[in-house]
Length: 456
Image (cartoon, rainbow, N blue to C red; front, side, top):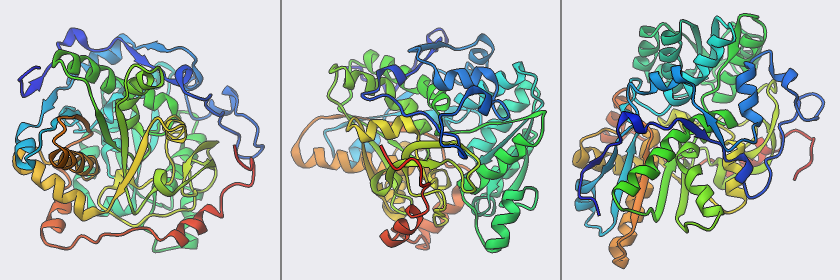
């Protein structure tokens, strides 16, 4: 067993291809459906908002898709990212478990999001697009896309969920530094935003609303495309550099993961981290436990329906078969803004539905308790989203303390919390509210699910 605190891969070991799990899923992935006809979408349906290269990746049956040289050149700014052994965290928990975390917070924007932002900016630049429109929750995706657009000479428009815009001003400033223009969503700039504000002038927004605005912006401007930071197959595909590298690093450490843990909003960091391991589990090469962690205030995987639903609030996007709380669901303004989405990646939902991946949910105070202990022992302040994963790591490590099992627990550390200190101030000041979304409210939102198709 390797005794290092950090396991690095050389620049030459940066993956040269992304792993596509579509051909290896336990059941075929259901096709996205047109929002008006209910028929499977065609490439022509997607061309108003996506370049052909992205559309091809979305439906590709190839297991390995080559990473273009210009994309790899940018990724080399921070990749391969290190795999850390959290020895001080282990010691504080008095656990026999061995805890590792894959540190995606080392990227320039501080999270995993640039792994796909760089690829999407590149493909759109190659297609002759001048501007990208997008949404962002906590700001990690918006800052990552602003960063990527700056590198490839594209303009970037970001619709930031209003509650996060107000909570996290430094995220907005970061986007501005990289040339992005940022608007608190819902806005008066789009028909979607105006309709939402007319119905609820005091709304704090949601990712679904912000997606509606960004999609409308892209669809109504010929020089503009839409870029999504999570959920879709091509996004999970680009994030698989995380899991591919982690497998190589565990091999160097002479370790075999017993438990894999990551936080889940739309499913990009966790999907990219876990699907290379999920492939091995489906093929009987490993029996590791794979657990996605979400907030109880937005319990998509743990309480949502596995049903076709829109990816946005207004209903502009294709219908996806996924775990959903209903596109009209508007979660409370918890600090983990990146986990406040009503649906989940179809790929991840498929794996949960088929029992390959498990899900668990927590409220805010327990996750911040874990992240403060992590910060005080390992020195890195986790993002509120990452804190959810660390709570589950902590709980699994404490189980090992009780049983004496020396399990290997591996976590995707999706980003640092340097721009989220207001959340920590609220926790330390006793102002965080633990909120579990009422079942009756979830049932109300699920009642608005599209009437076609009826199910699976």
